[in-house]
Image (tube, rainbow, N blue to C red; front, side, top):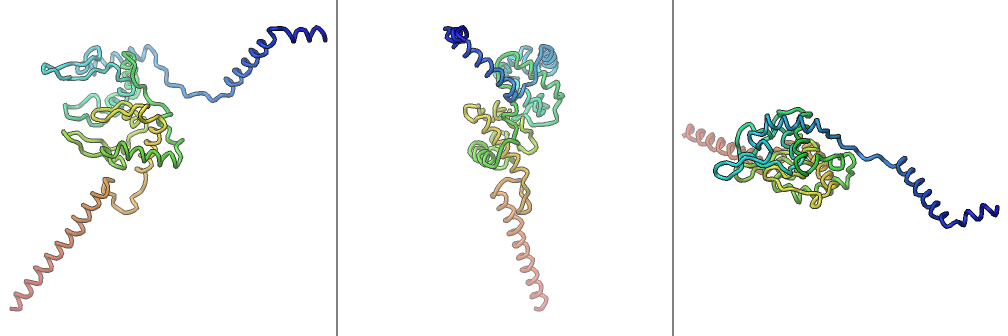
Length: 276
């Protein structure tokens, strides 16, 4: 007992006990802590395949090194893609906006020219050129985690930052110069998040410092919920708001009354003429 007591009072005993406690705590955390979502691994083969796809389908506008091509007037025929990140490529190519079918003030969404695998490879190649926004994960897009309060908060953020262009229910709207804010109906959660992160075309960039990933998720949850609601009042008029509802009232309602009044007046005049 005396020998054991002497060892306990050894100067290194406290250090050994602390080290042993840290090892046990670290092992327990590693064993029982929830595993984070793992991003899809990007390999050198993906980057190489993406570069080949880029040289065939994109270099004619964006340059062989993705640095863009300038016209003789000093404007960009195709802008530089250095630093735009994988999120921008995934949005533009995944929604069919790129490659453009024809030159226009704005690239419309259409059926994608590239498969999901090819889009991922193109995104991997552009991401390898310089740091940029990554493709958003479930932190941005998992709207199943949003409760009623989250959706309400998302609606407030959407109305404060997005309705000026996209309308209060994401129906879209016209903008100057032949441009427009596209409808958000049917757009995937990932592509909505990418649009907020990258700011495609005339849309401003909403970085995570401006709108946090959780707030972006709440905004997406609001858009999806409000677009899934039925039109309790009947014809929704495209969800474009009270101005459109008033227009329908005047054209159909008041217009119908005017037509009926004209018909009654004309019919009464004929009757009087015949009697005379």
